[in-house]
Image (tube, rainbow, N blue to C red; front, top):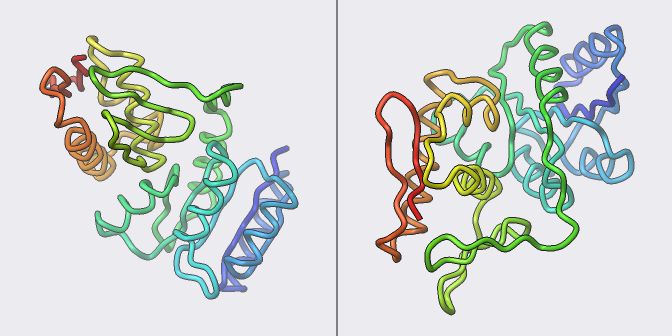
Length: 225
């Protein structure tokens, strides 16, 4: 069974979640703050990370950012009392795969963990993979987009979304496919988050008029390049 790294500073809640996961066959490493969680991540190499957002020493967003610097692909689930769009977008922007609003049911957490573990994770390329999008050069592995001498660092989520658009360039990429692949479900709330990232990518690509991300109403998006 998979190994879960759980980081939760509310010890009573953390113990309940840990025990519930272990009863269901998961191996659980438990930390009570972000710094301890990062150290456990680097030593244990878990299959999935479940982390609170509001924590001492290192908050969940900062923890996710450091984890992503080490590993672009390990699934990260945020446990949070925050549900405003700006907070959720920030979490996804830093590389989170899913979030659960407190209070939550253990059954829902387990379903989400299993969904992320069952999802095919991308294989890390052996060498940096540089792609051409119009006049831009997109380094997917390093998450960088370059035009002439100007280079921009993309967020993890921006790079993943742009890669999927590139793989379907000049074709329709269905909105529901993107949401299920990158967000875990196609809820209205996650759809709003996706809209934010599409807007950001359009801004990154605005200096080449031959590159466009079109809305295909009711279906999805098309990258024209």
